[in-house]
Image 1 (tube, each protein chain N blue to C red):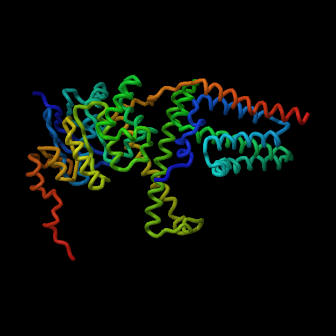
Image 2 (image 1 turned 45 degrees about the vertical axis):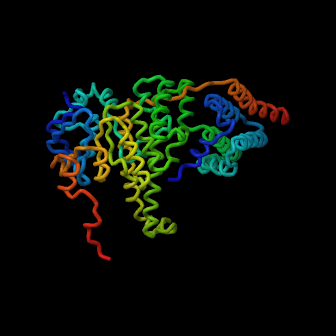
Image 3 (image 1 turned 45 degrees about the horizontal axis):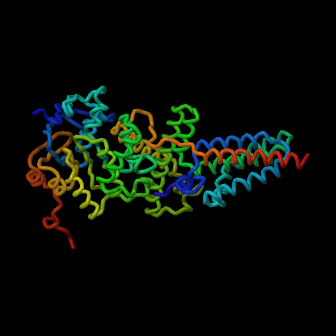
Length: 238
Length: 244
């Protein structure tokens, strides 16, 4: 079976000379979900921005059998949806439903069909009631759900989530995790939350200084790199 | 984040808010032409137009004093031209100039505070305005909010570290650092604008905004266009006849 994503020897240097990715090899099979763990600045977000051609580095990338090259970008961006860390950057249309339909209209869909799909996506994330609201009137959790709806509406095969629980309170965190667990798409989840990683993915990839330092079952990667917040093991001065 | 009053007002609901943007644009153009070409009965005609605009504000449930104050933003600019006219030995031109510019600004404000900018741009597009200019307008509108939000965040951070309003004043310690803060503001806004653009590209944006809902010009819009366009013309004719 051909892989869903195959990356070989990916390297990328920012304009200021920082080497953000250094020879990354990555493979993801159909139906699989993978957690990307690692310190801030280790290259996780830079890596996923290459998967739909938002950044172009050296090396080869294939998504759903398509090389990530300019002529394939519209098809790839339909197959691989990215939910960005800061929802405020993703929501820019005047109303929620217009924002969710934004990607569909860009695909050339007729208005009525786009409206109906946008409404269905809002229903999936339990945000139908906010259809006519301005996105900036929503709470952080609601914004995240609408951002996810905007991507789901395009019916992607792969969902990339960049730190999806950032800015969320514990109930929002829990309900988002439940929502994500129900979605049938393959997922790449960038997170610092080992419990979310374990709930959504079986495999984890650990990034360090622009390279993949290790990969394997989520629990073993978390244990190996001490990537959980265990207050019992933390000595705090009282 | 606080958002601009205009943006908040434009999201309101009233019969005026529900009118097709093209109807409001046509009425605005007629208003501006009637005002700009008047040369005789201005004080009385201007009074009539103020009544007309205040009626529109009340109808749209927009705070009248807030709108009147905001339209005053043009006065410093028109005051410069009024001063130039006065210095050039034509003081009689100064007051009409200031009056016309204020009323024009108030009329534009009535339209923009009852029509969200993207809808207004869609109306202009439907009337044949170049789509490139309109897309630039939409981007400017979006990035204005980006800069405004970044400025509010920076201000909160400064206040949280003990900066008082007085220190922002001319000659204050913070004033001296404000040039650097301004550079940081634009740097941060530029970075955030890049993130937003990336998020748009990720959902297939190809440089052109596509509206979800098409505009529908209904019978009520036609009636509104006729009444709103004829009102300033009728007012001007009545004033001119009375003064003749």
